Image 1: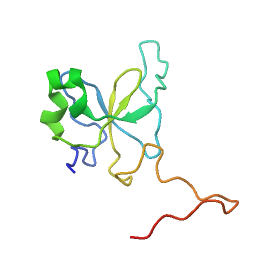
Image 2 (image 1 turned 135 degrees about the vertical axis):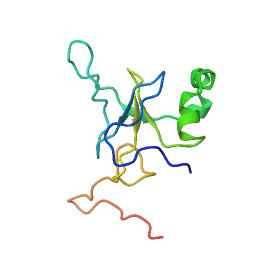
Image 3 (image 1 turned 30 degrees about the horizontal axis):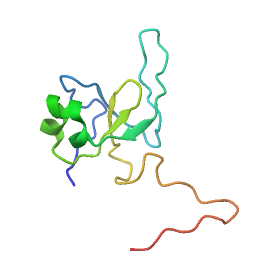
Image 4 (image 1 turned 180 degrees about the vertical axis):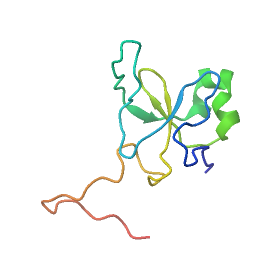
Length: 111
């Protein structure tokens, strides 16, 4: 798995055809503001840019971060989000989850 260009900075390098931000820990919705100052609020989904036809024509993301980087994209405004360097990688957008207070949550498998 390739690593992303998200070092400890909070302003990642911008791409020519995409707006790029860094996800906050636990963030699941877009926090981009429009011209009126309203939040977009679109869901962030893992984006597999190598299979996206429009991105193959552009090619910015693959040139910048490699073939298989972890990138999330807003479903409405198409802003790209890099994973937070402090958060655990490889999890889903929702994060690791919480243990149930009722004891119903099954513990994860030990490696």
